[in-house]
Image (cartoon, rainbow, N blue to C red; front, side, top):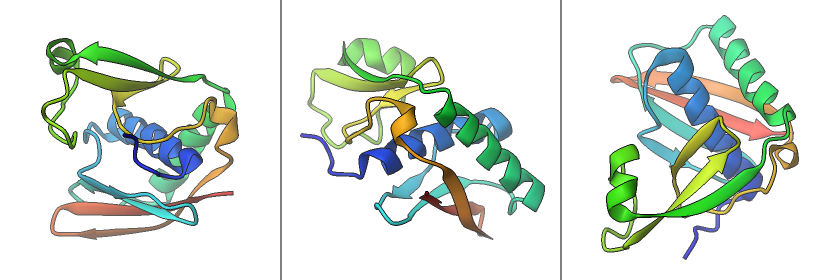
Length: 144
C-alpha cells in the first residue's frame, strides 16, 4: 500500500535528498513531513546553510527537475535490495519484494509513496527556510 503523499512534493523530496548527499555527503534525510502546500526535511548536519548554499541547492534541484527525467518503479527481492539500499526506514519488514523508485539515473531508493511519472510535473522547487539545532538541519520547501 503506497503512502498518500502529494506526488510532486514527494518526488521533489527524493531529488532534494540526492542533491544534499551529493553536495554535502550527508546521506538521505533522517525525517521528513511531506504535504502539498509545504514540506520539511531533516538531516544530520553540523551547521546551518549559507545563503549561497541554499541558492546552489535550489539551482541543482531545479536543474534536475527541468531535465524531464522519467520516474519509474521496479521491484527487487529483499535480499537483492539489501545489497544496494538501506531498508531500515521501510514500514513492513516482512515484505519479500521491495519497491524501488528511480528518478532517471539521478536517484534510486526504496519507497512506498506516490510519485509523478516525470520530473516536469513537479514545478519549481524553492527552499523557504532553514533551521539548525542539536546537529539537525531542517529545510522547509515548497513548489511553485
